[in-house]
Structures are given as C-alpha cells and as structure tokens.
Image (cartoon, rainbow, N blue to C red; front, side, top):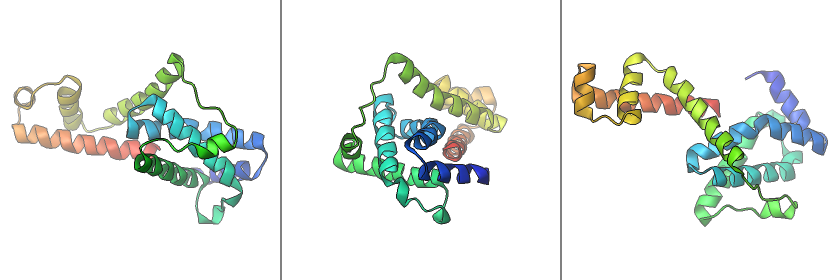
Length: 180
C-alpha cells in the first residue's frame, strides 16, 4: 500500500467531519466487501459497515498512526463489530444511534452494487489461479459437475480434482483477504 495513503488517512481522521466523509468514501467498498464475504447478506453487511464507521467516527481522535495504518485500524474495528454481532446474535448499533446516524436503507441498486463488489473480486481471484485449479473450480463450483465427471473431462483422478478444488479455493480466499 502507498505510504502517502496512510498519511492521507491519518490526516482525514484528524480533520473535520467532511474529512471523515472522504475517509468513509475511500474505505466504504472494502468494508462492504469484507462484511459481505463473511455474512453473505447485503443488508447485514450494510448495517455492520454503518456501525463500523460510526465507531470509527466516535473514536477517530484516539487513532495513533505510530501503531499502524488507518486502514488496519478500521479493519480492527470491523472485526470487533462483527464478533460482537455474532456474540449478541444481532448487529450492535448503539454508537450509530447515539450519533444520530440513520440506519442504511438499501434499495435494489445498492444491493446489486454490494453484490457486484464481491463478484468482481471473486472473478478476478479466479482468473489469477493456475489453469488446472481454475478449471477444477469452474467445473465443480460454477458448473456443478460431479468429481467423477470432472476427473474424466480433465483426464486426472478424482482425488486430484478434489485437491485442485480445495487448493484453488484456498488460494482464492487468500487473494480476497489481501484485497480487504
């Protein structure tokens, strides 16, 4: 990551509410994608994103750039918000409500945009895989072929196909984690 971006982020956190708005816009898509991959729900991802940014807004004066990047700090808040929502069985939204921030209402366009974020990143991660792993995942996951059918088509054993799918999915997961 560009170190000047970290400096810019730190400045945005220390600045005016309008500066925080720019920080929000810079990281909104990454937060939505992070939560969408973990919850598989656009509405829940939006709620968790809203609470994460509300907590970041409330705690922004406590950010210390000497301890790490603002993006890392934000993802730390996101992980805490997610774990608390899992523990409680609902999204904790006390900070968002205390700050008077509206709950995000998602229309069809917003939901499609959130779904598109993860879809584009997943497609890119799939394209980056070595050819044998990509073919195995496309056949098994996208085309829903059985392992025996896929093994015959790829001219390898059933266990090799299983291994390629498993390793390919792990590589994709690691790549998607890098993007957030």
